[in-house]
Length: 109
Image (cartoon, rainbow, N blue to C red):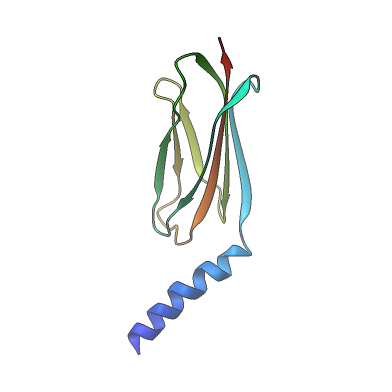
């Protein structure tokens, strides 16, 4: 019986939370240049921190990063210009799956 309750919980929570998702957008830098990186990912149920490195071609300068997160609550999103890493952090109480998209633009020389 306990196993059935846990299975129902794990099946119903993702279905229920889909209707509660909102889109949060974060932008870093100046929106100029061409798209040099585009990535879509999923953040598992209980994962609180996600980091994604943005590969920048040798002949490009990164000018802009846009992070879009579909989640119930707004995450804290940071971009480290020195390492080209995006960090998405949720509160410790996160019990839902989220998706995110990263788009980076740069100037090619």
